Image 1 (tube, rainbow, N blue to C red):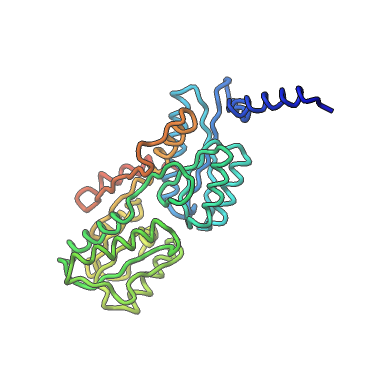
Image 2 (spheres, rainbow, N blue to C red):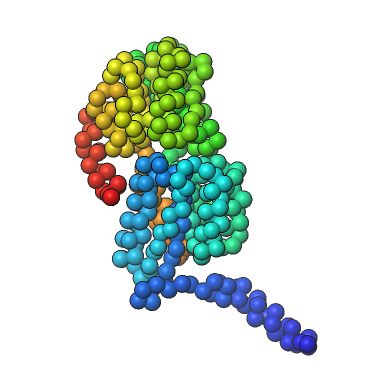
Length: 331
């Protein structure tokens, strides 16, 4: 049995270990004795090419950082095959057990993943969101689109193509995703600027975020509502598959978010008027950079919300923009 002095001595040692993080969590080492940093990366679904591009970006950033710094950065991809917020939460928990020092996640549904994010942060893991945020969580940063502005701009581009007149519909993706909720809200708000444009009733069509389900949703909605003259795609899901738009080119106007390779053909054919490209490759590169700043130097962005710009892609610049994908989706 310890005497009083021994107990006091143990308490002092324990307090010292809490003060110096090296006592609580020994840094892992990789090849050549370099410090090893494990970063977890969780997109919404592997079936969506924007997250394939993001994962390529994350891996590229890790490789480039490892080559230029005395650190070995490893990326562990934990994106579920299909959208599932519960599986995302489980992925966060698994990454914490695995010893990840940082995690980047695009949240399919914020309320479901928030408890897992908060638990990870409580255990000393740096967590940030990209693309789809969980603003009520303890994540330290977000990188991605200003979603309300994105929805507004997509309507603005469609209004230009339609001459500010006509009936439109909105393709909404996953109804529970916070980023998409904000885009829909922004799109609806933007309509107030165009008194001769109106939202169809029903106006917003939600669906599972796969190319096939999205294309089915557009076709079913158009068949049931032939008065729809224009579409706002707040995500480019149906354009990731061939022959998704069954009407003659230009007869129904479309403005869409994203500008992935499969979508560019619709622009060239005239089925789509404009694409607004998100920085989906940068979701990977910049998220890894932000996490490494936090993990290695305890440095956070000046603003917790880091907004990426949208790039307008039209027939005039589509060929030049398309060359980016040779790197972004290198197989």
